[in-house]
Length: 116
Length: 112
Picture 1: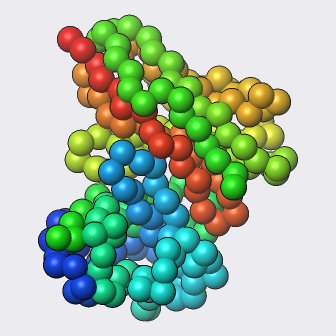
Picture 2: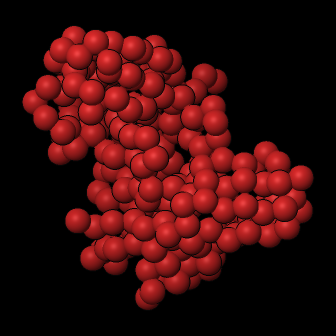
């Protein structure tokens, strides 16, 4: 079966513009996660979805960041008024039921965002 | 903040040799899970191995094994018979509720 897919693979935008990043999880996975990987650093948790709800959005760095998930499947991460410090690789992952410790998270290839 | 520390930013190993990547972590929980993920240049994160903290036996997956020392909060990854395809960034991670907390990563280069 297909893995986690993300689009676009790369995105270049100008400071101040809004961007949308898309994630298609593995079919049947109810849990979906967004992480951010800045240059030379590990992954930083952003938000977790269980179904269409986001019980943990503690990692979103500012109110310019938002995410939604519809139909228990596709998720969109939106960054408004982008800043240069938003430049990073944004990774999406999904897992079967949402118990981060018990289950394996399967990652997509990420979207590399560059804000000029 | 509860952290995961990988003290080796970069490592090199000759093909067919063994290399160990170190990881220490901080947690106040008694039961949790630990992971090693591999990220090749393609950016696709791949699970290498996982360990449940309440299991004393070290996890093993083919050429990959861990040395889990719960009291010391240490979780090192040993790669035996290193192959060129093992060249990647390796991340150690710990479960924290519904998310994973990652270390900064170790770049491993396997030389022929």
